[in-house]
Length: 520
Image (cartoon, rainbow, N blue to C red; front, top):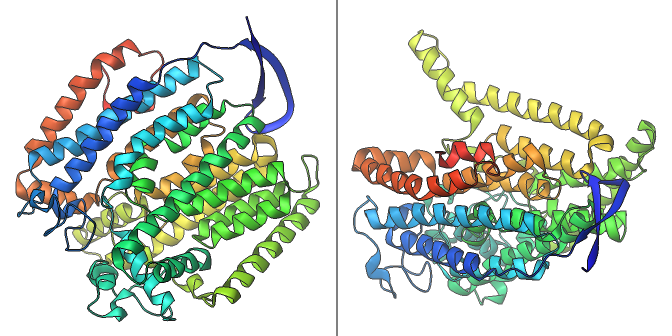
């Protein structure tokens, strides 16, 4: 029987790895999971189009189809309450996609050595309906288009919001909520954003297509970088790619939602991979470019710098190399800011997304609870004041845990420390959107085994369901429009569909996930 070499390491630390042998598995068919996932993602798309403005924009010109006056525009409901078939399509499709993903993860874990291209082909099939569909579960891409239009006309995106564009599609599609909100993104993204506006000829639909292609390019960078990191860590590349890129969270937020977090994570993963295989300096440069999309990626520079001096380095040497990494990062962003003409205004607008409540932000929820208690006790504490204090405490806690993880990372591994730090920053930050979880989950996919792997799966599933729409807004619609019965029926159907398969695989199913989708 043919044999293949297998490298096994502890986490992502490749020192002391041992090489063994295992039989090369026979080829397996991936046709069934590919078609099942395709059906699931198609159902999600159909439900989103049918579900009205709670799931996607139905303003004229928002996409090539599915909006009033265009193909499939007649499907959009007139009322605020999404029809039951839309709710069933979205949540039923998510349940089916989740079950298919987990099943394929189990299959790949039993058939090591599967070519990455085969697994990637399955993921592409799942993503195809989402790539062609209108952007849904978020309208951020329309805000990106407005900001790019501003950049292309040399309007400072850190001083104004898209509302300065007046009665154009670039403003109206972004919506009134963000009309006066400056951009919180760095020069990497806004430079590309402005270039997309110019290349599109300032046409909104062409601009949206280019922006989605930019985010798909970010996913491509993740796909390119994960196998390298997986091999260095002694993991199976195909399983890591499926865990990191094929999750319902990544598909519904990076592909369907077209969030620029995809570009940030892509550049971050590429930087980590380049630092491992090519050189530390170019890896730092790529991580700096990732921070030029969204600031949290700067943690990649910090962790690479801390490990730059080698596994046996002294604390003094680590600090020196970390300062060097920071200097390289600063020089990279300075050059980019100068070339693009965008500047450093994003440093003062980083908290712009925290202006609203998502319903799942821990510090925000705690602020609401504390303000209600204070009100009942007759104390004069305002919600804004309590939230300001808790925001600071949350960030301080995230900083403290991050420093602890950084100091431990020479023993526990760079990727584990970085991934956990990014995840904790997202959870304890001033606002938590579902796609923020992807910052840490994609990095942790490389080193996720045992309990950590179960948590990565559980959070990926929970994030996908939470990310369908803003939780507070959706709950108001559900309660006041009588949709509660619809949702109960959907989850009853989901439980009926999943319980038999969960019973058959009780020993292998992550226990955290059973809390999310139910157990027999």
